[in-house]
Image (cartoon, rainbow over all chains, first blue to last red; front, side):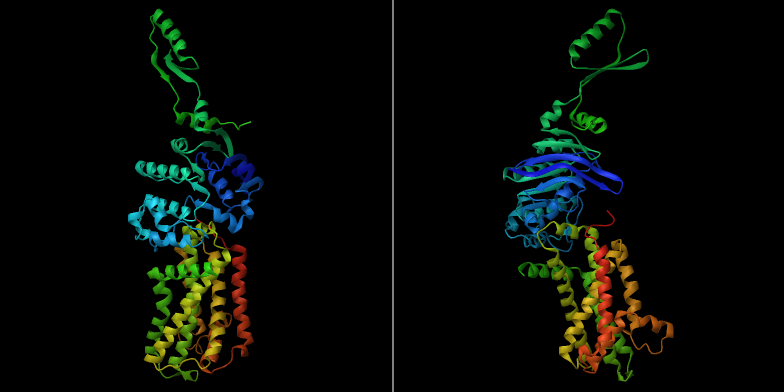
Length: 284
Length: 248
């Protein structure tokens, strides 16, 4: 079954085009990553799906309904972690969970959720005393307390230290095992690779690449051989680095020349991503 | 109804848990009554000074709670993203707003009772001459100032500015409308300004009901002016109110 369906989604703010017609589909139980730099249109996309913004064009369904008219019935079934929002600072962790649990007809057990997001020891602490990472886990707990089928996580680990990110990843994986559908935005490639079943790379309001993480890596650019000759840099891209390198070095050795600053560069995942972001062309 | 009760409880917890706002909103008006009651004695406009001050400060309390307190709270919640986050839950907007209003009303009624109790015990002031008529007066007052509160919330851009803007409106209004003492000897210009302000009419209406035992419906002009101010606020809110932070 399809959880999310987005077709030709367009949105402009004044004269600025935030989304220039993007399309993707997320199946139930799938973790889908929207990957892209700041300002690419990730948050705009998510906020349209959550029902915060009206779209200018295109078709969108969230759990089978148009989010602009989803109303309380749709909001019963989704959980939301916003990019930047506080929760009441004067309440305790448990009180905030209870407050939000009360908005849903079938909430999960509050203490269970608090344990799940690793705030068990902070249950009685005021929100204002939590660290940044703990506040983010509180956001996640509050998003889970209504027992949603579909979760929107907008940059859920931004600002986390590496250890906290690992913990958050484990949590997202465990949610996936529970059968939740998750739409995740991130500007970390490794996060998308670790968590998402499928990824859409978005840039300037367009999806420049879409597929499983493995397929994305498959799109890696060729290996580069670089060296200096007569004071200028030579860069050769090739699919056959071994043969080309043998030819180059053989010829140079025969002529008694040295290939200055010789190196063979294999692009990392980071390069794949940056290449897409810099030169990406819309998928046909 | 279950949701309304749940949210009303949330609103009450949020109000009392936040010490600064609870002191400013709840304690400040009765405190001013204590101070002014100790200063003034004798008669004001043919009434005992304590009685006039009591009514004046209940009026100020209404504006302070339903207008100033409400607006500051809503701006802070909007700017911190709490309002936006709640919009993503199944809690209906109407229920949320009703709970906010209900909580405001509860706080003001409690404050009014405390102020009256202080007046009765410390300054020998009298209780309301017409108790039943005080009910619509209180409801009208809270509705009028809460409407203005929603309106001004829509015009304030930042949490930092909220308290300043709101107090710049409330304190001079209370002073001009006679909350803190008789206005008969004010310069004419100030009395003209006072003639436009809603608090002038709330106090006038309350004076008649509370001190003379007059009826609520005997004052259509006062009621009309209060309703008009409340509607003006609601109209501004209708066009400009936002749930999302302005500054992020």
